[in-house]
Image 1 (spheres, helix red, strand yellow):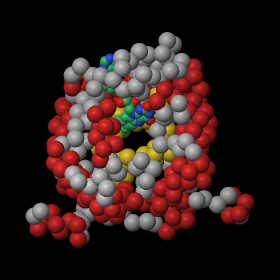
Image 2 (cartoon, helix red, strand yellow):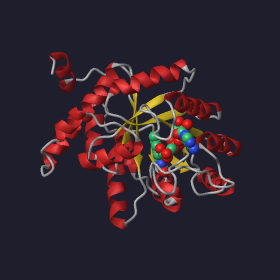
Image 3 (cartoon, rainbow, N blue to C red):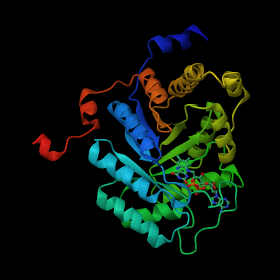
Image 4 (cartoon, rainbow, N blue to C red):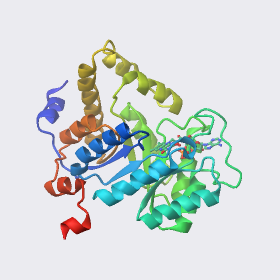
Length: 313
Ligand code: FAD
């Protein structure tokens, strides 16, 4: 490691405003609910631009996603973004979800096509009478409400896509329909992100393309997940976790170092916004944000669990 790189870890230069967002998934059990809220409470004082809540495959978490988003909205000062997919539902069903979010005060949706009910890799067929793809869904949202809409982007191409050009055409269609931010699938080689960004800009797409950062909580799970969603896992990454299967403490240190190295390289090359896949755990993400210079704010901390109106009066 060079002296210049090393110096970032003892006193990072913070020339620009750093923006972060955090992604969570809706909990299935009470225990998971507790873990999620511990993570939210720890990360809230870092004042993310928004926190997003995923939508289970095939709409399987419709109620739980809604409940989590609603709780974030009523109990914290955070800005929630609700993920929504087109899978297994008619346009009327999806429109009802969008309207319910709008009525609850949600102002941001992450609009996705979603994976086929048989799982990633199976042939996708739109639901009869449903939105046919993510661009169609973005247009549907914009017809109902003028919410902020974010969409997905794939630095390594979506596995269903016949070509990078087709992939970028789909991103363009989503932007033309009203999306104002793209969040990328996770990646480990920053060169993939910058090559993709060059192509996106060359196609005339000028919305922010925020890199999705996945701190590696568990290497084996990450590798299996990456294989399903078409993200490559470089040999150097496997090498860094080699031999640590039974050593969670060292794994965590390595995971923090790997993610810190990735975000500092992105930062050095002009990136200022980062979306973290938290897997509902705060520790690694908190540490990386700390390295990025983010510090808890007292007001945000107090607001992480907002007092009911009556008690504040
Ligand atoms: P799109 O942007 O619509 O398409 C992606 C690519 O696939 C495009 O290039 C398009 O041309 C191509 N393509 C699409 N349909 C076809 C087709 N029928 N034939 C050939 N090519 C096609 N999944 C969830 O279930 N819930 C979530 O909450 C969720 N959140 C996500 C958040 C982010 C930031 C990302 C990156 C992904 C997320 N996903 C989620 C995964 C996503 O649903 C899957 O990757 C899904 O397969 C594609 O949905 P999309 O909106 O990304 O696809």
